[in-house]
Image (cartoon, rainbow, N blue to C red; front, side, top):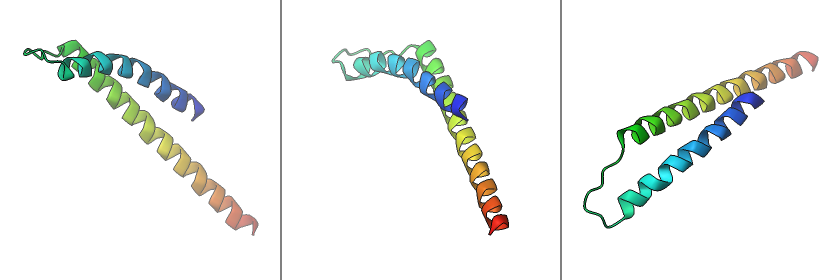
Length: 76
């Protein structure tokens, strides 16, 4: 689970690096706001990977909590 957490953190670094120039383009006063298709595809892929890692982390935490609760009920 710790590996998933670290992987999710390292996925956010390139996402932030790609979002900064794109938001700068959107907020600038230029009339032609053309976002690169490559940036959009990479950003969506990174977001999907982050969401999958988050779901995996949530599932693993839930699974370990159920196991701990089950063990504590058996011991009591």
